[in-house]
Length: 116
Image 1 (cartoon, rainbow, N blue to C red):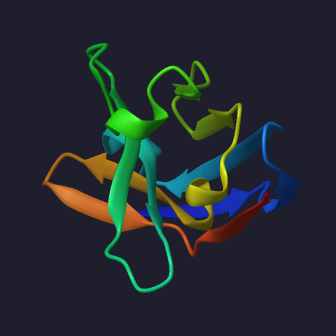
Image 2 (image 1 turned 180 degrees about the vertical axis):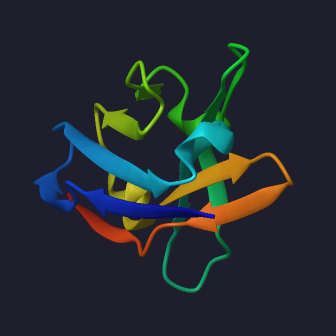
């Protein structure tokens, strides 16, 4: 089992940048994919971007070219760099880790609010 703690959310204006971080603990050596999801008020949770240890990545179409998911060398921290933020990017952002088993673990979420 993996525990995840996010940080870095906040209130920004449209066009600005923000970086989210997520630190994993526990059985981090079992992780093979990490990424970020978000949930806007009244909407379902959606995938923002993920990366795998074998080098694959996947992004939501609306964030391609603006958002980047990356990890540190030890794969115990995952980042979400968000540039050119838009009001529609507002939501609660959740860190996700997929481990061999498979196991799917989530962070507690961090609020991102983009004002116009």
